[in-house]
Amino acid sequence: MFELSPEGKELVKKELARYEDKYSAIIPSLYQIQKENEGWVSPEAVDHLSELTGIPHSHINEVLKFYTMFNLKPTGKYHIQVCCNITCSMFQARELTDDLCQKLGIKEGEVSEDGRFTVSRVECLGSCDNAPAVQVNETYHDNMTPEKMDTLISELK
Amino acid sequence: MEAKLLSEHYSDDSYIGLEGYKSKGGYAELKTAFKMKPEEIIEVVKQSGLRGRGGAGFPTGVKWGFLPKNGEPRYLLCNADEGEPGTFKDRVMMERAPHQLIEGMIISGFAVGSHKAYIYVRGEYMDSVRILEKAIQEAYAAGYLGKNILGSGFDFDLDVYRGAGAYICGEETGMISSLEGKKGQPKLKPPFPAIQGYLKKPTIVNNVETLAAVKYIIRDGAEGYRKYGTEKSAGTKLFSVSGDVNKPGVYEVPLGYSLMDLINNECGGMREGRKLKAVIPGGSSAPVLTAEETGRATMDYECLAEMGSMLGSGAVIIIDETRCMVDMLKVILHFYHHESCGQCTPCREGTGWLEKIVRSIVDGNGRLQDIDLLNRVAENMKGRTICALSDAAALPTMSFIQKFREEFEFFIREGRSQVKG
Ligand SMILES: Cc1cc2nc3c(=O)[nH]c(=O)nc-3n(C[C@H](O)[C@H](O)[C@H](O)COP(=O)(O)O)c2cc1C
Ligand code: SF4
Ligand code: FES
Image 1 (cartoon, rainbow over the protein chains, first blue to last red):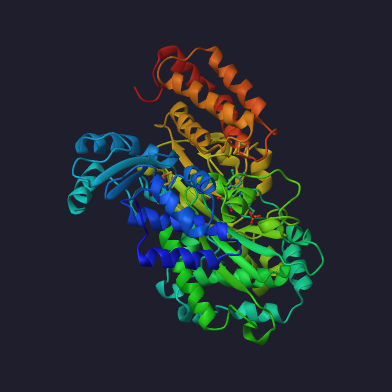
Image 2: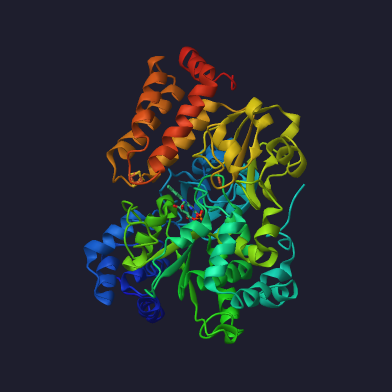
């Protein structure tokens, strides 16, 4: 069973009133769920949101699956997202990703044993002048190198 | 020569806040606009020659003129989904000058008779969302947003909507679907959003840069704005330059500016003095230019169209002699395949095929007939779908093959890249 915190429920209520159409509250509510549910949206959480909002779960599920920023399985505490699009791939982003996965002993999309990390390749992050660009949860990191990645990982507890 | 119109104060941190913005002439044009009639503003924007900066380059004043001429409620949506690979200027604009966008939107909303507007920001841009939300609060507190703005009798509400990761939501009807709380799938046009958009009401969708530019058209007049640029490409444009140059970044120059000057002057020339091989001038969906074409190119809608490419979102990707064009095409096609929303068969199947074929070449399993196959698949994807994503995958493919055929042939024959040993 998943239930949003009182603040989370308050947020959903506010979002339902914020936009002209209550369906617009789905995306912000899913973000809130993901924040409170270890980085992913579980089927139980969809049921819960459907109950809170009166929006059918089939519809919430459709939305959930369409957008890449919602995770359908648990993620590590830090979700390391490496851009492997055009400019970043020119600056060794793919090699950086492989190297990182190897160091953490995981494949893309998996959670490291200590629960700290998930690594994903993502599309252009809009930071191509800082290639390769990496986003960890909501924070951008510029001009990443294997060395900078090592430092970053050791700092993320 | 940089021409700093929009970006004049982007390096000044105080410009982010309301006070700093006002001290640099912020919200002065809003007052000017309120002394004009809405129709007059639309006319000035038409005269200025401003074209949409989001990719398609459609004349802004003309688009505004498509709205029904009645009192029906209408929406203004700012497209800040910025997903075209290589593009990052909207992020810089929102984070360095949120009030500039807000002021541009109030003026635009007044011109088109909208009382409710949204900025749709891509989900990854959390910093932009926070900065915009703070600026919007400041603007409400100072009476620039809300009821009866500056005693003009005009009411205008503005809010931010955060997307959740889907390139296709940058397409205007996909964005409308997404804002309505649905999958962000594009809709068949007509009806165009100006007639039937968000919640089936008339809706204007414009890019961040387009809306911000409106402020400067009010400030300088149509004539003043036309001092920059060319006859068909008026004004200045922010270019997001990335790749093999010494100083990648966002640069504002007049339209019609020489591409070589942009590389050599603004961007400090090629990295490590390497030789230029190619340039993608307008985001990854724009057909590629060879070094020879780059030497002749000017950054305006007409020159790039004549060369068979496009200005697009103004994302300029500089490619040097050490890069493998086959590998780059693979990356581009992976993206479009991944982002196809799947509604149209030619796009869904075509992007999949293109990626698969180029991948097999890169894996060393290519056959010479694959080159023609790529062209045939791409040809069948053009102009037959709900939105332009299908073309966005087809056109670069055809241009890469046409202009760098030898590299594809080498890869197929030798099973390895011509440039990477
Ligand atoms: C696949 C696709 C993606 C697009 N992505 C964006 C985008 O990220 N930002 C944008 O402003 N326009 C984007 N557009 C263009 C929009 O559909 C629309 O033309 C634009 O927002 C209109 O604003 P403008 O006239 O000010 O350029 C995209 C179009 C397509 C077909
Ligand atoms: S062209 Fe592609 S992305 Fe656009 S609507 Fe059709 S399937 Fe979706
Ligand atoms: S290509 Fe990586 S941030 Fe744009």
